[in-house]
Image (cartoon, rainbow, N blue to C red; front, side):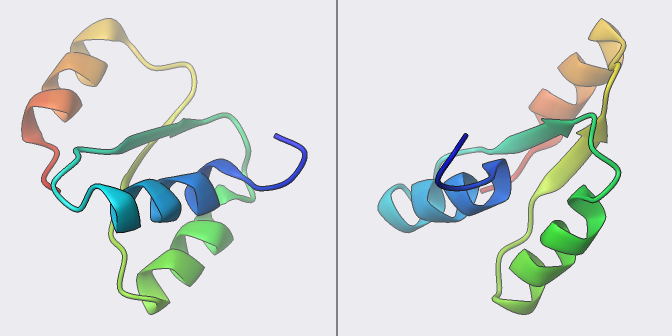
Length: 66
């Protein structure tokens, strides 16, 4: 996304829809720094690294909390 990254988008979604379940999937190694920044702002998101096995994705989706 040219104007924001996925974690910034997740933060904006969480602001608009606080009970929305959000699971982030990334193939970028730099995501951990962005995720830490989100946590320092009070946002907690689960991050899965690509490639994600379908069963791992399914289990993660079942356990994601808003």
